Image (cartoon, rainbow, N blue to C red; front, side, top):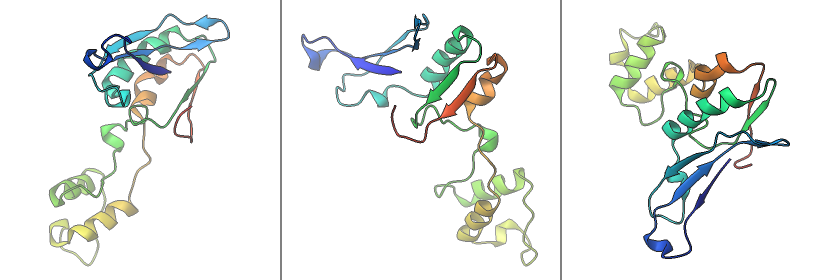
Length: 159
């Protein structure tokens, strides 16, 4: 879906340009987009992010023919989880874990007075046992426009 290009003249001094588009057996859909990135020639993935992707994807959905199949690879910006379904990570502090548990209606264990009496490791384990299935932003925001389209998140790293 995307690539990064730079002019062969003074490549080290040029900004990177990220081009994205969608094609089919009938040609490109006319939803190409260009993002200007940094001068880092080694990795354009740092420049593409969820904001850029979702901005472009809104145009893609509108242009897709009915009953299209959308296949996305494992890039993090394809798999951004909605705030409501984001599960705690090991980076969460105690206050964040307690907030998540309370927000998601997880009951305080019978042998504890409150979540605040528990150790962080116990809170993490409790949150892990009560994880909720993720919903991806791309699915939530654009499902109403899908016109019978199907989205697949590929299990491989890159397509």
